[in-house]
Image (cartoon, one colour):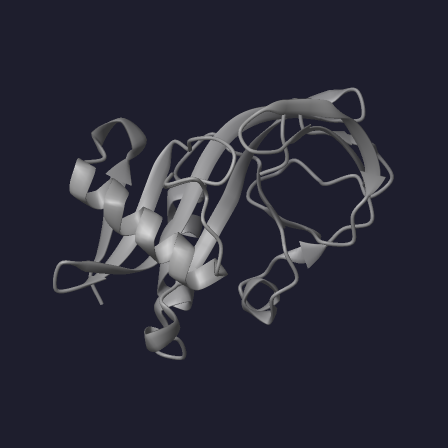
Length: 175
């Protein structure tokens, strides 16, 4: 399976349109014609069938606060597989590529919000932390949110240990 890595600033109009279509098909919603839900990412990973994008994962990097400590987090977002191509290992292959990318970066952790067995099988752990983030709706900054989200999943990449008791300040919107 061939996986293309596309830096956000290098997206072509065709790739952007293909990702937009895939996200709409996969989630059954329109993101306002955008190839992202709330904000752009740093890099995209896509799988194609001919010219059609049938799999997608986005990855962004930012500093977040784990209690008083500043750590580097790669955030996984917009995981999508074309409904007609599910069950073929596309998401598993994309996730492996994303994890490799994160391991080669300065990220201490990969963070996501989800509950799929796919993530647990790859080594992500569900975390109990309270999170602080800025809500975003329709690409507009909302209010500060403090919540305990049972969908927080984390993969440790290096020597920095995750603190299950710390409040996690995402320093922006949730990934």
